[in-house]
Image 1 (cartoon, rainbow, N blue to C red):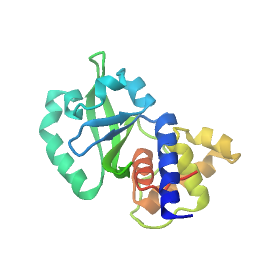
Image 2 (image 1 turned 60 degrees about the vertical axis):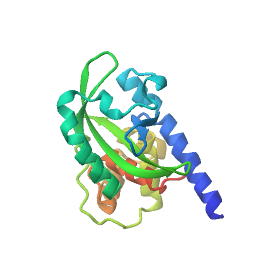
Image 3 (image 1 turned 90 degrees about the horizontal axis):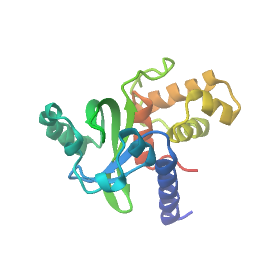
Image 4 (image 1 turned 120 degrees about the vertical axis):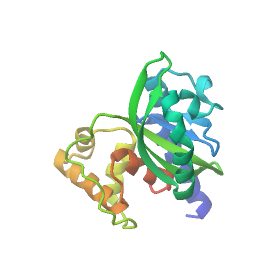
Length: 200
């Protein structure tokens, strides 16, 4: 397979995961403007694509969040990876506390920020923070589990899809977190998807 074919295959999977995932995802350009938001993102916050695309994400943050945005963004541009919590204003004016992870990705030739959003509810207790063995390669089964997580499946749903136990899925997720040095499923998905390391 040529590098061009490989890149095309990755972008096909990227857009499939982006569109179909139950995890809210958004792409921002280097000026923090929305480029795309997936259906889960639009549904969570109640916006239409035309309400978001071309507008800076700062416009959707409550005023008390704004003083830290620039420093956080500079850190992200420097490292290409970020996780955090923020409050975000929905279309109906309500404010939602979210957890998110961001990863730099080159999509259709542009350097973009891929944001994967989770609510502030704790993740499944079987997950544990990555231990920093960054750079280890995920096994084919771990990659398969992460692909299902990227599509928004819970551990139970992934277990049913793969015909394995829920604990087996959680073990694969823990291993993937450890190998990538990530701390949450959102960060894991953002990093793996943004780096082009998930393919069908």
